[in-house]
Length: 111
Image (cartoon, rainbow, N blue to C red; front, side, top):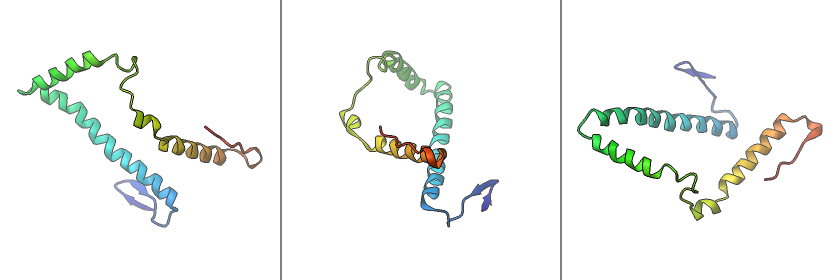
């Protein structure tokens, strides 16, 4: 196993599903961490510069729109018809249950 900056990376000879899991974790970190840092630093930058009015407009929009989740948000028929996430969730749950349960008591999970 290769070690870079204290992180153990899986070798390239691993099965494809293991490599995809590693890629998913890497993508999640590379997308989540910078966006979080940017989202925490940007408001302070906007408050102390001449661009504070952008933050004021956003705050007014936030106050106006804060009850939309209780009212149903903004429904999208395209997202509601999408079945990719449902299939992915079902497959991953079946795989986890089959891996964790003993061989005698396998249960087929259907959503």
